[in-house]
Length: 179
Image (cartoon, rainbow, N blue to C red; front, side, top):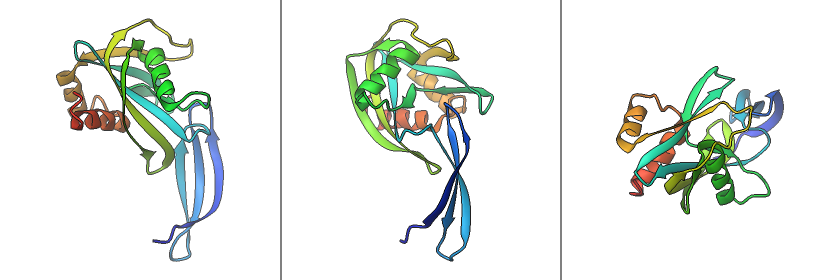
């Protein structure tokens, strides 16, 4: 399959949370088509971590997202910081966003964020987490929540947990029989 030729990339919206790029491609027929691509800042890599306590409670975030003006329920996720390994980045997010510590962290898999986002996300699983302390920055609007595995899955089914990456991460851990 021939890859469409990229004619132009124009950043039409950029802030510290997300950028929107208008990409113009030349497709098979020779025509030009434009696609808005969304991505996080300039980073190409991110990590997400699925924390579960010793009592098998799932720990997750309720976080305000200004661009949709609503809350999103998800596992801790953030862009890869260049000075940290993927594992170190995931551990940092585990401690910062859901205030958990774990010595039992395993890699699950990696994927692209979506068809319109070229960010590669590496997923991790943190077993036997212990709750630590609030480590949020003043500007972060995050509420830490926890519930049983059964309740969490019901929240997915009812679409209360609606972050596709979180659902994928949970499903991968379930398929690998980690939960």
